[in-house]
Amino acid sequence: MSKMLIVYYSFTSGNTKRIAEQLQNFTGADIAEIETIVPYTGSYEDIVSQGQDEVQSGYMPEIKPLGVDLTEYDTIAIGTPTWWYTMAPAVLTFLRENNFNGKTVIPFMTNAGWAGHVIKDIKKECEGATFAKEIEIRFSANDGERDRMMTPEKTVADWIEQVKALTV
Image (cartoon, rainbow, N blue to C red; front, side, top):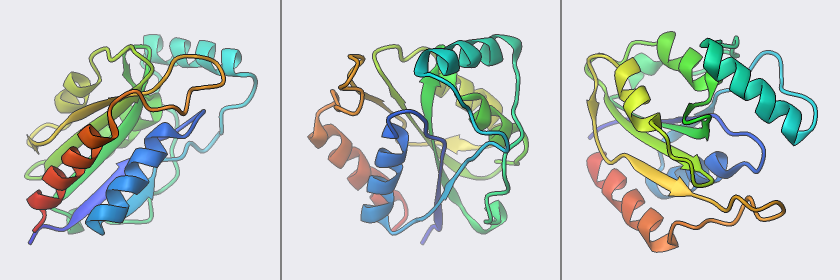
């Protein structure tokens, strides 16, 4: 039996958190949230602009300790929202600070219609890992509806069943 950890970063509407918690509820896996030392502040537009600058410069914000030991896990699901066609900078920090050699990594990402190259970028950073069951989950891009999932619920439920089967 494989021991699984779900690690995620979520912002704005909390969509990535929602998917991470749904995965945790059905798999019984441990879960940990990536949090930046200095939280993002300002309007949505301010944070989007800051995020663009951070992605373009390769900035990696300091993150708080997760409170778990990754060496205890065989399988790690990693969730991120899409920030300017890639992972959130906090996720990049997490990936570069940890060793995924010999682990099975399950990348999942949320977006509002701009999938970009998130999964490819996560794979690039997790040298030595094997990958399984990656998924892109789309949410609405409309103001006031950013928490409305556009990907069919059945698609997410089927993905969760596939992930669960990996750890049995």
